[in-house]
Length: 119
Image: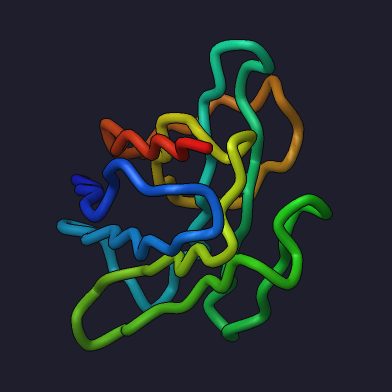
């Protein structure tokens, strides 16, 4: 199984980015997909998830600003991030499954993409 993220970068506070997560080697339509970020000062933070029935969930600090989506034909998940804040800075990775606690270990995950928000 491979998960490959793209779309990270440097953006000013208040700006937007869209992350993509391509999944290879797994029946994507059956999978729940999570976005998780690694923040140096705070450790691992679960950000959002989308289930195979398209139900979505978000951590409180990103509700109303981030939107997760999936395209089963393209086998790709997305994270649209708007109104970005300094505290959103981190390495974002996607993973199979849903686990919302900081000590989660994801067996199938991507390498991550850096998101840097400057004020």
